[in-house]
Length: 355
Image (cartoon, rainbow, N blue to C red; front, side, top):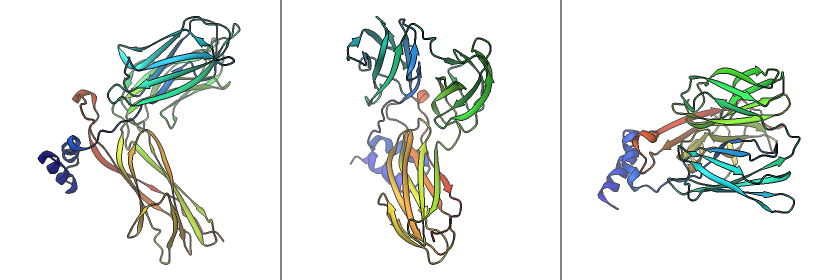
């Protein structure tokens, strides 16, 4: 091991200033890589569209490699391919456009393959659509600016929705409310919204849904978002056997921070006589707690982590979740979020043992 790496690791073990520790250890730590994640697509999955040279617009949360990213379209009934053009936008490398060249009536499937520009991590996905003469087209929304901070105000415009209908606007993977608006006689609207303080850092979906079920989504880059990026949810229930309670804990990374060394610590309930019966997946045991380690957590959910206790009275659980984000290697200073070590917590409501 090099002298630099040895020094960095000693600094990390001593828990000195978090930012210094992470910056020093980054040079000798393994590179973290996560595939691109689709944030918004127009038109939406299972859309019915008029027969035309439709452009499909796909927005991801990471910049893409133009030479390695591609898309294909084929007919569902016989698998025959449709001629398409697909390209990553030069001015917006998170955006993939797919254009149909010879559209014809029928049911189709679009398959995309997206490759991250920096790490070459790849992801694949599909969506269905239909082309028909009588189709009115798909609903669409746009935001007045491509980037914003938590608390900023911006305008959302939409068209192609049900006429004189109520449209609900949300933002983020957890669909935080933005506003509710009525469409006009043409199925259009325009409304000012404010980004809620809890929306985290990263490329976030802004979605609109009308009373008829029409859905449209666009993407918004949140630069300075709400905290913490990771949330935890704990639920307790009686059982499974008499005299027992079980706590289930899940964690969700709502941001584009690639978190590492996520440590879930579930404290044993307080009353005397409480004893651990079982836990899954298999945890490590420390005095007064069970511990689960997650080496890396990309955007999304991990869990549930479950622990069953034998108790004599109603009890509640308390969990502490520690996590960290390392500054990506080779990332320009003005394009990378900062390194940090942080934590959050989760408490359940009291639950009585099964009788």
